[in-house]
Length: 65
Image 1 (cartoon, rainbow, N blue to C red):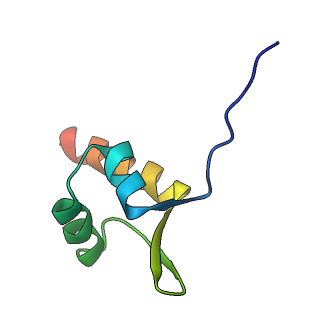
Image 2: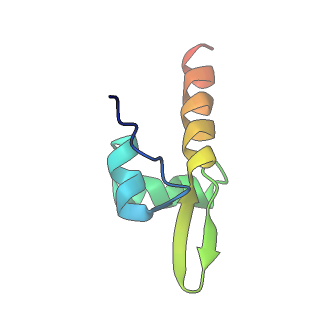
């Protein structure tokens, strides 16, 4: 029997840092530059799972130039 870990829909900033292997400073720079989408829930800033994939795709496109 195989188990599949459920993927989270929203990631906290420290979790996104770990997923992307980038620092807190870089995360916030990318958010300010509009390169990494986030949402707010109350006072908490969260990164949608789709935004992680979009950011990685953006980096891949830029690397291919």
